[in-house]
Length: 509
Image 1: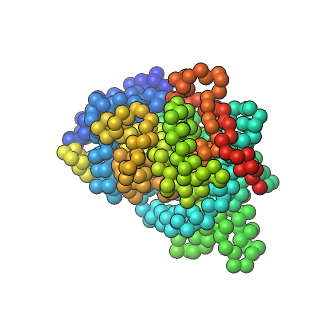
Image 2 (image 1 turned 60 degrees about the vertical axis):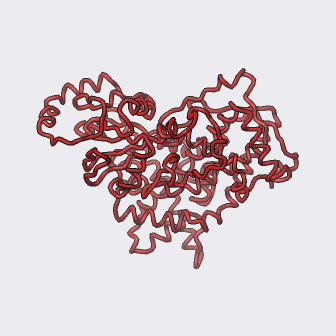
Image 3 (image 1 turned 90 degrees about the vertical axis):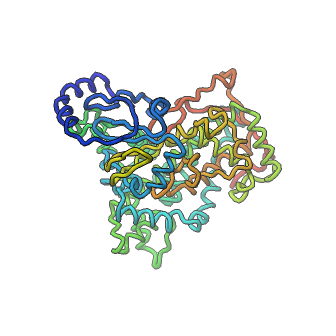
């Protein structure tokens, strides 16, 4: 997040008279505690380059339910299991909507996607299509062969690097496998490395995805001080509009290609998720316009790529810092899977320690350290506090994952804490909420979990891992993160791999 402090001070001084008039006549309410706000800019000056860490520090002073203002926009920040439950379960319907911000307007067809659409008829249709059509158990099982093939491609790539004694760039490998799995499941082919005559080149598409992640995670001043939105002081809206035009070219070509294929085959059976969406749009009752189909498609591509890759990279980084955990994972897989085959999805349920590694990574390094903002549609009370309508709610998954009253030694990476535990990541346990909970829980959670578990398990099963020679100790491994739509490692992970299974297993078709 980049906010020019000098600019904020000038804005505050210029708008001070209007703020004083509003403050004089606003109704009195018993709001949750919070720091004293500056005129006009509120608490924007308190958010550093890692806002989740800034809010974590503030919550230690003001409590598990904190009231802040970003510009003129009121927020409550929930930083405990109890407060997360209050927002996501007890008051789920009240907080089921989303705020209208520039990213939702300009990058996803005027809030037409699943993530940013406000609570209402369109969102209910989107959720129904996701749960019953796109991410149903039957649909995900039918795509298992794609996940297997793409993980094999990743393993083969790592094997080639190891055979040449070259370091493995984990971010490149994990991003490629996630992108290719999602691309094939959603679009029908590997758009990221197969041009196919499209106007948008594969390298351009990767750049577009990176820009989308950045622009959906920025703090745009116009979202919080609406009177200044027309100025676009940081240039974010201009970049969003440019990105939207590029995505529309790509998505329109995707839909045209699918339309041609559907029309050329009688009684065509949907082969990928775009086919399913176009089939749903054929029913006038759904009111699924072409722009909405494109918005859904873009959502699935973005939501299913970066998050999975980020989690696998963090998991490997943590395991390299504690080799005893690597050894324990290898022992478990050797015992249950054996050394004569690769890990399959059906094995994951028996790999308790590997599951623990994934859960512990999601606890310590949540892809979204603060869940996508919720918006209250009516006044409610949480405990003794008033929460007015149109208040935005942030649930700090980052802080909950480090709560000493919930987790023993929370700063340590300890997968064994989940052995014998019934805690899962499906939204029922508010101690662990990587995908959210309630009505607005991520509809693609099951798919994301499958991609992460299968990819990570086979990287661990297939190779011995160690740090490159230029890193003398595990303490030198940079474990800081960057902030955006996701929170990847600031420094991409590079490691050395050595095959640990019989060589014939690395010969894929």
